[in-house]
Length: 331
Image (spheres, one colour):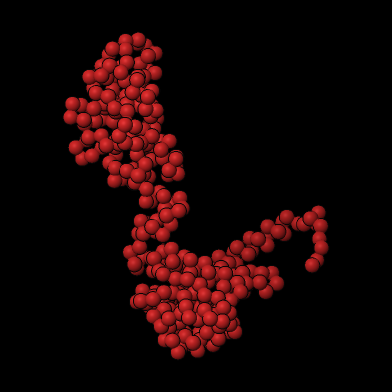
């Protein structure tokens, strides 16, 4: 390996080369978008009609891209997985069934390990979609549909390392996955169900009812209660507020520790009833709403860190503090 000193590194040259790589790859994607033809729609239709899975395969750098495409398809509503073409010849061919569609990646269209799969796929009756840079290759001629992933040149200054070609293949795979997502009517909630352990899944699946405080944990006082009684409830429940209810247990107001501080700055009467101190029309939310909706409500008004959870008749069923949202990792 050639040795060099960082003292000889020319930052201007490095930045120019990096920019050229990005420009080359961006132009290749734009060119691919311009020449996209009905074969792409045909590929989408064949996958939609497929009763099995989409098996994605490729060798070397194309294999890495194929793995990512398979993962993107699977997470956006199209059952899919990656099969290594070399392993396929040693038993993994049994993973490919007649009802499946195979998406094979090969820039040259002549990759030995990928070409070796073709006879089996034909015997099995599996569909074959080729993503290749060579429309006249062995792979392209054998495929039911050919997706043109050709590039004028690689971004590598030596013209050797797969760079532009893999970027174009990755982008084409994303386009395929998202066209399928749209055609299936795949929703954000569907996406969340396949990502329950991630931040997005938590945000799209967690409901107020999952994290709200209930029962004895709720700071509740009657509107006829005195400030002294409210102090006991607020300090005992640790939510920095008390929900004020009428005689039918409906929410009529809220009294927070902020309200308390502002009152005590000018007054010392602790016998005053809550009806005179509470804030009417407090912010509320229903239990079936998403927790992210609670975040939006809190952020829509300054200094709101608590929400009362009510039913349709405005009966108190729970309460949320901003800290509850932090603990649930919604924020």
